[in-house]
Image 1 (cartoon, rainbow, N blue to C red):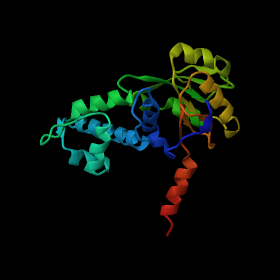
Image 2: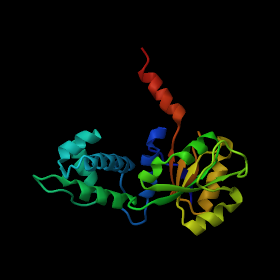
Image 3: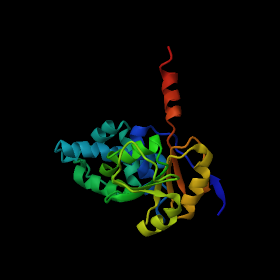
Amino acid sequence: MKPTQARRLGHYSLAACAAVFYFLAVKKNGRPDIPRKTIYRLSIYLRCLARLRENQIGTVSSEALAKAAGVKPTQLRKDLAYFGTFGTRGLGYDVADLSRKISDELGTSSLQPVILVGVGNLGSALLSYRGFEKEGFEIIAAFDVAPDRKRDKEFKQPILGLERLAQFIAAQGVKMAILSVPPAVAQSVANSLIECGISGILNFAPIVLTVPEDVMVNNVNLAIELENLSYFIQG
């Protein structure tokens, strides 16, 4: 298969990591060609619906949900139309039902296994973060060139050597990986992940990865996010 440069929607802040995973989960054979920005907005809708459920609100209009998500009602209805007909005219959307349907479409109704490669400072922080599980994703193991190195904290997940990567991925049926390795080795590690069957990569290395067309890559570059903020705060 002819490689192509990794398709990218953009760069995401660390706080949005869990939402970025939804892009990777939705890549399934036989699905319609849905814009990635639409998938991202579905993640936002799902969080808005979760807040409504927490407040024991049973129904919501498209106008109210769109306002909470920061989009126009026409955009909301267009996004949902990719997956069928939702809501009842004059009554709005059933919050629980719409939440369930979006979760089903995004493949997050049950915990999805994820692995992490590169247990440095950033990798350790991501490995300790418990928010992923609330969003439907579980980091079940980490891999590092020095798995036995003494670290400042203990992790519930095992830290394994890279030589065990292929066997673990095959045994656990993992399709998604977090890449938090130095840029000099990011491409080679990504190649190994893809050869082992990984089809979605959340890349923290400041490098553009070259991957096959059926592999999805999302990039998280905190420096770029800070540069964007720097532009807007200039006097």
